[in-house]
Image (cartoon, rainbow, N blue to C red; front, side, top):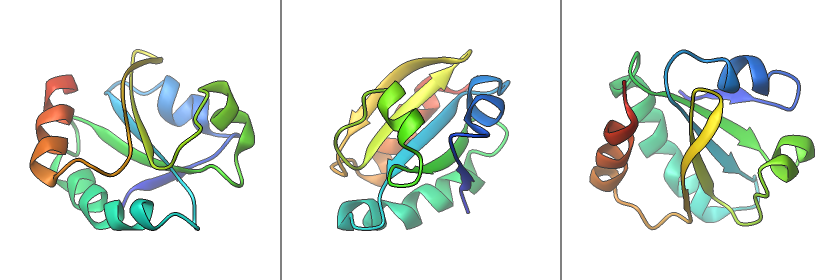
Amino acid sequence: MSLAVNDANFDAEVLNASEPVLVDFWAEWCPPCKAMDPILDALSVELAGRVKIVKLDVETNPGITSRYNVRAMPTMIVFKGGEPADAKVGAGQSRVQLVKWLESHAN
C-alpha cells in the first residue's frame, strides 16, 4: 500500500527522498482517484527501491496542495532531487502507461 504523506512530513518523505517519488494528490470524494488506488498500490510494491509512491489527501493538506498549484484530482507529480520533474492530471493512464512513465524517471 502507498504511504500517506501530509503537510507536516512532505519535505522529509518526498523532497528529501533519495529515489524519485510519485505523489498522488487525491480526495475522498473523487471516484477516478479511488479507481487509481489498486494500480498505484500494486506499483508501489512492484517498483519499491526504484520509485517511491505516496498519497496526499488534498482536503486535509491544503498547504502542499496550494504550494504545487494542484487544482484537479487526481494529479500525479513525480519529484526528483526535491523538485517536480513531471506531472499527469486525471485518471486516463493505463497501468502499462503508468509503469512506462515511472520507469522513465527511475534511478
